[in-house]
Length: 194
Image 1 (cartoon, one colour):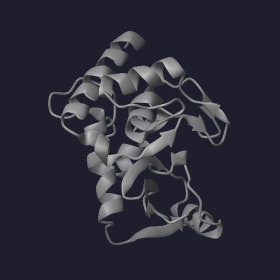
Image 2 (cartoon, one colour):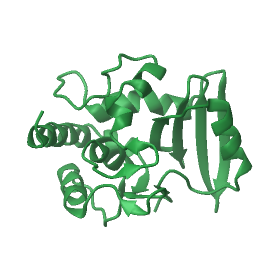
Image 3 (cartoon, one colour):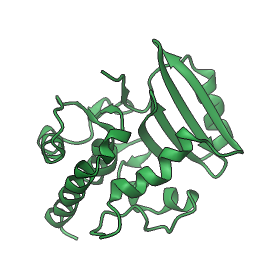
């Protein structure tokens, strides 16, 4: 599908998400990836996504749902883990969450927007973690953070109760141990709440 068509789908989804208040479940994030020290989407796209949602944001810090869900579909920056959009397009994350592999694809869907599907899968992991997950609660300058790592290999991360990101990890136990071993800090491009 052409980039213009995908962008149209994304913008329609964002309008629905904004109207239904779904973006409030998401915290703040920078588009500057901590692994490559570069913006993964450009200012023009960043501004367009936030304008469509009627959210005031100053590049490079914006709504994590807009950046991580919609923005990542259009990122052309290669990170050490591949393209940011891979988490939504390759089916691995969806399958590890017990969903159809195409669950997070960017498509017109009368039932649910991409952000709606991602939020429904990730938010319960951080608000009411199921049994048999590794929950890492930390405080960063008085701000609570929670990383939840599931046995199938999914990381869901929230700052002050708001989602920031969700992505697959290769070795859940080793990943969780690595997070615990480091001093508490905001991770995965999170920015403290206002």
